[in-house]
Every structure is written in structure tokens, then in C-alpha cells.
Image 1 (cartoon, helix red, strand yellow):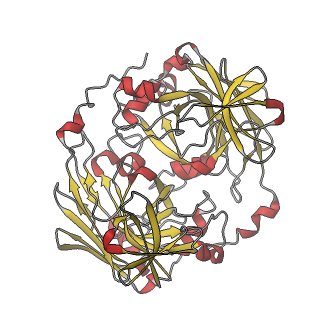
Image 2: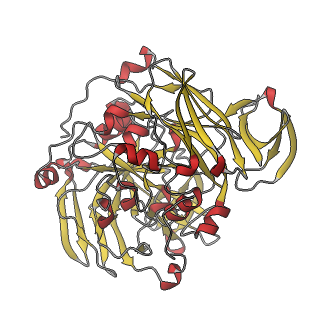
Image 3: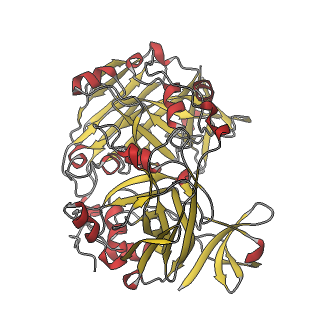
Amino acid sequence: MDTWMRFMSSDGGVVFGRVEGGYLHEYASLDHPVPTGAVLPMRTLTPLAPCAPGKIVALWNNYHALAAKLDKPVPSHPLFLLKPAASVIGTGEAIRRPPGYAGKIVYEGELGIVIGRRCRNASVDEAAAAIFGYTLVNDVTAADLLNENPHFPQWTRAKGFDTFCCLGPAIVSGFDWRQARLVTLLDGVERQNYPLDDMVFSPQQQVSLLSQDLTLEAGDVIACGTSVGVGSIKDGATVSVSIDGIGTLSNTLVTTAAADLHHLAPQTVAAT
Amino acid sequence: MDTWMRFMSSDGGVVFGRVEGGYLHEYASLDHPVPTGAVLPMRTLTPLAPCAPGKIVALWNNYHALAAKLDKPVPSHPLFLLKPAASVIGTGEAIRRPPGYAGKIVYEGELGIVIGRRCRNASVDEAAAAIFGYTLVNDVTAADLLNENPHFPQWTRAKGFDTFCCLGPAIVSGFDWRQARLVTLLDGVERQNYPLDDMVFSPQQQVSLLSQDLTLEAGDVIACGTSVGVGSIKDGATVSVSIDGIGTLSNTLVTTAAADLHHLAPQTVAAT
């Protein structure tokens, strides 16, 4: 097992590398993991999300326990939506309530798969080889938007706001997800504690099947879906998602300053 | 009005610029449109999609005529999904039938908005200024997947396959969409012919409202939704989408060679 992180250095540059002791051994990049020779003391660096995905594939209904609770059949193919790149934040960064949205905001603690190389129509074995490692995801949702329109479920809108994809703190390669549990705390109180081996589609099956639907690129993240215990986050509350061996991803929901609201004048609907 | 295109040059490089006569006046990039001084004869170049979007925001139910035909109310906020970057092809490139999918594949001729600069919580005026220009989109859909699972409409999967976002042939800046009609031909037979001023949300309203949901980046494309006349494409058929003043986007649906099918061995569903 190796632990990989990404930081902003004091000169504003981005460094990626392997963590050893309190030091970051810099590597060229995630898809070209060759040491540069630089070794940086981590205390001088500001943590970022551990990768910069071009897209985040987020699964729905991928745990048997949640399917049973929702009384939905287990799917025969991964059910997914895309969260955009700009939704990503790292541990310690604030989840921002969207301007003008006063409704419920929900956390979902999830295992994240980080893709290491381009992947298209991959067999399960090829898929396993294309996985760089695992991270943690808090797949945040503006829950009241999801079914606001009865004719079109707004998955991407509800889950795609800036700061709604918390990622980190690290990527762990060679991690054995089968033995692990995911725990989510809301202001220190346990809300989720579920075994990853209850997944419907294993990580390598997800990568293989999703790669038949779209091309996965190095750095892309698959959020494996959540299980039971999802709930809403009050403004000011902190969500901490943990898996032993990967670490803890911690983010606080903040309201947008009134100063950000000045553009929200009523919009007319008619076009012409 | 200026016409902008992107090409692959004979050395494999990508060039972007303004078209004048048979020549491409090269510019640094779409978000930094400064002439490089190079002027290239277009006959030596291979056309590409006119931009390389990080994401494509695709609208549903954005024309009054289509809403009336579907008997759905007009939405009060744009309804959208994301198509991934790898789904983009240019004019003349083949739409590839997904391996293992034998169902209906549908064309949708659409106006495309190309974003020129990063855009977040933009007013309608700021949104108008953030539009680089307009292009054409054929928003291809594997229609039988959309409602394959009764519990989760698979918009992204059905519309996200590689080659399912035809873009081009050019971006036209300063284009007056209000006076224009979009025409779609299937193997030379007219199937769509609708006025763009029947849109529910105008391009500047779309950019403004969408920028409250997600950050739009330079080069991103908004597919404005289609109107009536959508239909299925038989293997080997050619779809041509045209708007006077922008040009014609032409793509043929081809079946994937049997050689590409070797990875499609049955997948098991159980994870552990």
C-alpha cells in the first residue's frame, strides 16, 4: 500500500507524490508515476483534493442494504450520473450552500475509485489494472432539487454544484477494500458505518462495465455509491468520512455570503 | 460574424483559427483569441470538432413546440444532463454504434453555445458576454437505454457514449440565432426544420441560469435542446444538421467491427 497526496506549494504550484513519514516524495503525475527526485516536508504544503478528475462518475443504488431499504431491485448494470470537474474540493475546504437555495443538503459517504490510465471496453482484469487506487468521497446533494420537476429528475443539477464533490484526503494504492468499512460522522456523531463488501458491483466490475459506456481517463473518479445512513447537513455542520487505511475527509457546510447574492435578480422565463 | 474552426495539421498538431477565403488565420486559443501570425491553406488540414469542451451541458425540453408535442409543461429552470468530453466528434467522423447495443439510436439536431470564458453566477448581460459563438450539435442517444431501468432514467449513459456528441463544423461569433432555422436531413430527407426563436430559454438565459448550477469553462458547449422531428438512425445512414450562416454537420452511423467485441464476455453481477 502506498499513500498519494496532492498539495499546493508556497509558490502556488501543484505537487503530487507519495507520502512517507512527514515527507512528500514528488512524482511526475498520476498517469506517469515516476519520481522527480524532489522530497518536500509536508508541513510547508497546503493539501488539495488528491487528483483533479476530468469527470466524476457517481453511482446510484450500488449497495444491497440501501436497495433493500429503498425497496428497489439491485440493478443489472451500474446506474450513474456525472458530476463536473468544478464540483471537486479537498479535505478541510468548505461545502458552499448554492446562492438562492434554502433547501435540504445531504451527505453521502462513499468509496472513490481513482483511474490510473485510459480505459475503454475493458475486461474485468484490464479494469483492475487500470485502477490507480482508492479515495473517499462525500457526494453532496441539494436534495430538494432532485425531484423539483416531476418530468425530469435533476441528478446532475442537484449533485453538480461547485464544492459538492468532496475528495480525499489521499489516494491509497494496493488498498484491500473487501475488508474495510466506511464510517460517516456528522458533527462527531456516527451516521453511516457500512461494509464495502456489500457493494453490488465491485470496483473492477464498475470500471469494466462503465468503460463500455464512456471512456475513463487517468485521474477520473468513480464514486461507488452510498449505503444506509444518509442524512441532511445543517449550515455550519461538519461531515467526516473515514475508512481505516485511507484516512478522514472532513468538510463543513457554509452559507454563501450575502455579497455573492447580488446576481440573483429574478430571471424571466420567456426567450424571445 | 467570424467563422472559427479547428484542424489537425499534417504534423499531428492542433490549430485553431478564423476562416477567411480558403485560409485559416491561426489564433492562440478560444479563450485567448490572439492571432499567432500563421496563415494556413485549409486544403492541407483535417477538420476536427471546432472546440474541445471539458463538458457538454445538454438541455431537455427547451422548445415550446416539442413541449406541446410531448404534452409537458415548459420548465421554469433549464433541465439538463452532462455528456462527457470523450463523446465529441467533428463533422465527417463516424458515429459508432456501442458494442453490444442493438437498439434504437436517435438523432437530435441542436444549436450549440460555445463558452468563451469562465462563468459562474452570471447575470444575463455577463452571460451574453461569455458566449464565444454558436455551433451545431447532433445530440445522439441510445434511446432504448433511457428507460431500461424503471427506477433511474439513464440520461448520461444513453447520451454519453464515445462519438455521441457530433459538433461542428465551425463556431460562428456574432451570429444572430433569432432569425435562424435549424434543418436536419436523414439520408437527404428533411426531418427537422424549426425556428430557433421557439426556444424556452434563450442562449444568454441558459448561460446565466446554468452558471448558477455549475461553473462553465472556456470551450464548454451547451446543447440547447432539440425540437420536433427527432427520429432513429439506421446503421449506415447519414445525419446532416444545418443552420444557414453556420454550415452543415454531417455524420454517418457505423456498426462497430466484430473485432471490437472480444471484450464483451458476460459479466457477473455479484460483487464479493
